[in-house]
Image 1: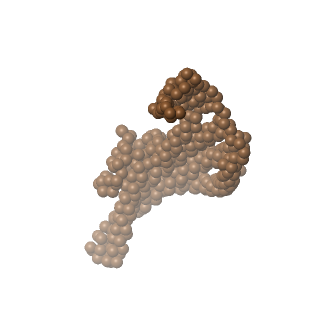
Image 2: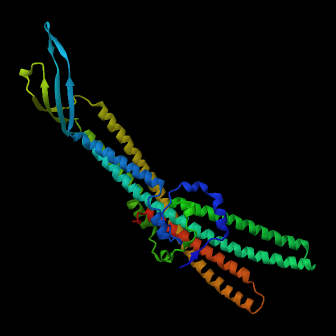
Image 3: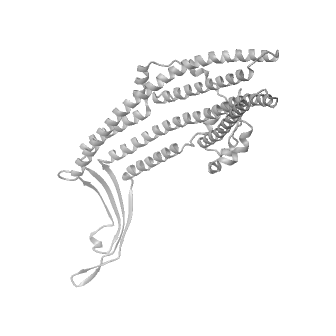
Length: 424
């Protein structure tokens, strides 16, 4: 297991930069070192977009319950204290009734219920898609922390070399073997490397803050050490042809599926509205007492009511016209989305093929740098002329390039898998 630890100067800079992150919810007992799998587990349901989508699902459930509640029993109490004038006498016209009513059939209720159910289904599918996007984002931030630590390692080696060279020129200058121009030149290089080191250390803080943020933990609770993930198996995966990837994307892409479902839902709504004649059948019961003409009216009444509008229903026609416009809009959105989707698939496919070739080249370069470093060490130990410092710097820099290429490949691969619906 390879651990990548930031420079010891990092801890002295932590408190300076990111006090604002202290309001984030801390996750108990964050592992240190932290693996990618653990980071993905911690980051579950921390995305604000995921939380907002969950609220959309909850809102849809309320709409569904509201649509279904039109068939619930409705009960109310009806009281009246009154008198009515009949001829020259005042007659008691008070009553007390309990009224019960239930809708037995409402033709357009299926439209609202069906729409609410489709909204919930779409929202759940969108939630799953957002959670997968969040995982890719966590991976990206995790990789960025590892990379910036590797950058610092290379930079510290480079700084050590430039400082040694500056000291050597200083010694020569003290005995008049080097000019002031040479000395200032070496010192300038050293100071430039110092400024680069400071810049990378600042990036260490920033990248760790971004990782803590996306994981929903406080910055002071973040793990400083990350486990370098094993990713070589990604390069052994067979990349499908471009045509198959496009076909899979058009069939399985989550966002595209939601659009098609919306289009189908609009078609069903139009069909149901056309066959809707506004028929409503209700059953009702009235139980109670009344003072006026009590002997002619019993305590119980029950019946069934049927209502149906007559003539042209302009409201229905307008609703159908509006739904047809929405259907055309969704159809155009689908066409535009498929064009963009095809372009994205092509871009990712080309990028993956390029990164795979670069991986082979960098692996060969790392083997070369390793052998060169071994030779430089051997020459140094035998007190022969050696460029050990440069060899070590080049080796760690190639390690960084290889890791970055791996991470770029993995992120691109996961994005392509998400586009084509292959991430389960």
